[in-house]
Amino acid sequence: MTTLPSHREVPNLPLLVVSIMLATLMQVIDSTIANVALPDMQGSLSATQDQAAWILTSYIVAAAIATPATGWLAARFGRRHLLIVAIAGFTIASVLCGIATNISEMVAFRVLQGLFGAALVPISQSSLLDAFPPERHGAAMALWGMGVMVGPIVGPPLGGWLTDNYSWHWVFLINVPVGIVALLGVLASVPRDETHTNRFDWRGFAFLAIGIAALQLMLDRGNEKDWFSAVEIQIYLALALLGFYLYWVHWRSSLRSFVDLSLLKDRNFGVATLFIFIVGVLLFATMALMPPYLQNLMNYPVVTTGVLLAPRGIGTLIAMTIVGRLLQAGIDPRKPMAIGILLIALSLGMSAQFGPDVPMWPIINVGILQGLGLGLVFVPVSTLAYATLPGPARTEAAGIFSLARNIGSSIGISIMFALAARNTQINHAEIAARLTPYSLNLPAGAFDINSAQGLAMLNAEVTRQAAAIAYINDFWLMMWMTLIALPFLLLFRIPRRTGAAARAPLPVAEH
Image (cartoon, rainbow, N blue to C red; front, side, top):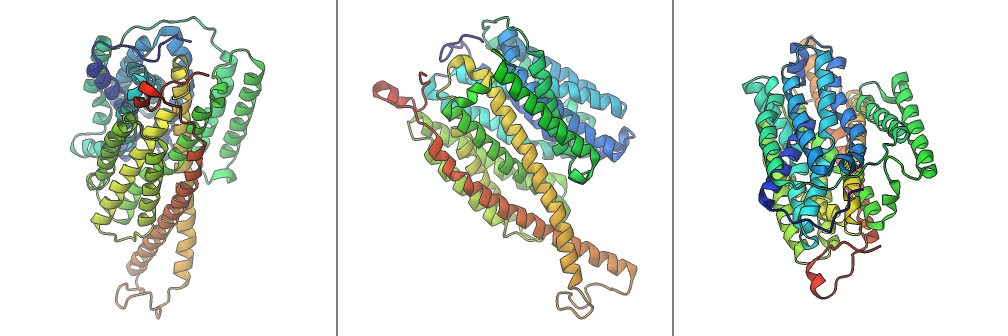
């Protein structure tokens, strides 16, 4: 592993921060920006709906497979060189995606995007931690969190605006100027670091890649294929379990494995990884549920949906700015995390009061509360995760941390959408069973049930009401799951601070 001090002096710290954040934001936005452009891409590339879905799936699976390799690549080639290659490769892959002429090319180029982009988030996190002294790690994680957490919010409306006003090609081509600026900034500001030649654990990589890829494919395609009633999903589940089991056996029997799971034995890092997994399950699912709720039930266009979701990002930015200063002042990180969890639970409880015709202001208020809670949780947990880890372990730990968050988000999104689809069917049947020409639930003259058009309109309204109830049930479930996460805060260990160290809320502790 690379031997690093607790932090490294950087001649041009502002340029390093801006460059790394641009690269991170570019990668994170690209994980969601293509979603809204998918129908246009499907038509332009002459693809079926199932084929078009692979445009999203290929990127997610490739990034998930490559993320655990970040630690070995950084040690072997150096973080500076890895950043340069990752940014350049991601930018070139974006150009190739923008000029793709058929679905095969698009899927292949999206795989390249995922492979090159996988290292950007963990490398950016570990680079910022090493560039800042321990007493400013809270501020560093606030900066990093702004890109990681605001990116998924910005992606869909930006993709919709580009698609509506230009074409789907610009969803990818917009990365070119950002990538060039980020690359030049990294070349000018990121210092060189030591490299070490370590043997690559091909067997461990193969086992872990099979497990992660099968799990991501199962989660991404499960809802579309009706989950375990489909042979395809059963195969993915079997491969995921087999891959993870074989890697666990390999790790237990090897002196040096592909990903060092012993890092999870560090109490803070282990608890933080579990906590960020829960955050991924809950909060990314919330981000994913709101756009279809607003577009399908409220009939808002993509751009309007983006405007209504923007306050969530504003709340996140405000909270991260505040909590970074609080951590630098020496406050117990668990206190803002507890407040953040309660704010998130409150926002989900308020979301559970929504109906299919909710006004705009409640949506905005909920978004602000969720953003504030998200910022108060994400920065301290990201800081605590590395508080008791030695510097050389940060890059590999950041890869595990990012992988846990991504898998959590995939699981959360899959579960919540599956529950929404299933409960919509159940609610539709329950509502329809109670509707008769004499039912008080059917307003007089609202629908002409004696015509095919009137029955179709009635069925559409029943479906809309049933879907609204299903979303509400999801919000209630996530609210209680959020509150269940609260006791996990007691498991974190806060390093002792005395004298001058009291100004450093999270110094690197000795093992």
